[in-house]
Image 1 (cartoon, rainbow, N blue to C red):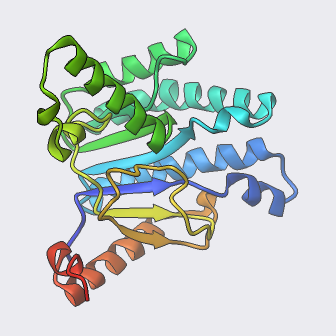
Image 2: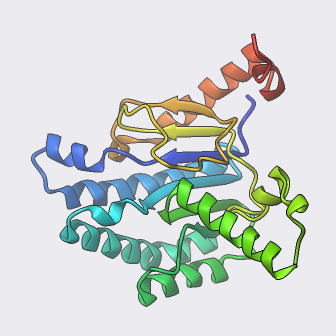
Amino acid sequence: MATPAHVAIIMDGNGRWAKARGLPRLAGHRAGVEALRKTVRAAPELGISYLTVYAFSSENWSRPKSEVSDLMGLLKLFIRRDLAELHQNGVRVRVIGDKQGLQPDIRGLLQEAESLTAGNESLTLIIAFNYGGRDEIVRTARKLAEAVARGDMASEAITAESFAASLDTQGIPDPELVIRTSGELRLSNFLLWQAAYSELVFLPCYWPDFSREHLADALRDFAGRERRFGGLAARDVAL
């Protein structure tokens, strides 16, 4: 089976999962963290080298303060409780998104996770935190414009390749497959540049119910498309 090296997941539906069970939203987010743990463990077993998860978007700050506080608490708990296991299992952690506006303790934890696991090679776990695709593109454009203004590069040197190399995901291959749970059929400002040629799989299950079997099914779906269409180059030909 042709397995994508890089899979990205929009982990959607925690709140609706909790509501359907008469539980507070926090219970849904906690169940979502457990689903993430299972997915991270399953990814390398299924042949995935890079796994990007949409943990907290730049638009999520508009949620009720209590919910944002709960999400920050869960992030801290996840890193403190799971970082040792991730490191032991050879998982490298990368964080993408705007880190400047984060609280010092959150920023410190994320930096610690990146530093501790920098040499690991079993799986690269990319956590999109305080992330938005449009914001990433704007920040990158600003960075390149400032480089041109300083005289560090010529405007003609700005190409699709140099732009991609300046994104948060520099050094990481684009995802071949993007999965979204909860039945929503949109990217929601996630990896807008990187997902330009990704295959998309939308699942009706809420994220807390996502399992190794769901991931394996999505990979089989991807492999079936590869066989039918003969790979990326063939799919890009206009019919």
